Amino acid sequence: VIRVSYRLTYDDVDEMLEEGVGYSEEWQLGAMLAAAKKRRGLRISNGSSEGMVPYPIPQAAISVVEDEGSEDNISISVSVEATHNSGVNQTSTAAVTSPVSTDSIPAPVSQAFLLVTEMMIMAGEAIGKWKES
Image (cartoon, rainbow, N blue to C red; front, side, top):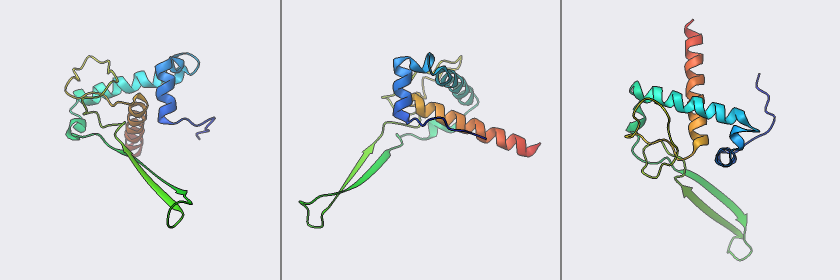
């Protein structure tokens, strides 16, 4: 059973890690990120298909608000950003620390995205192994 004590967004976690809070008061975030980086290095060294996705994965947001100045009193805005990627993007800034050379496959821009991605992959693998046994 998972009990959520509070919710965090990707941006919240990225900020906590950048400011060091993810390594002190919320040390679990730093520990999970370290495990995620090691796991990602292992996957890449074992031939992960991560490098097969050549472009950033966009994040889209659509908002609909009342707009008295428009004909139908509604204004719609669409925003698309490529802040979190699959790992193949020259603007990547997150570092991967592993004995494996990952120069050809940069880490995702968001360390929070890397953390969640790797933990979801590990959870899927664990369920698969549990089901086999």
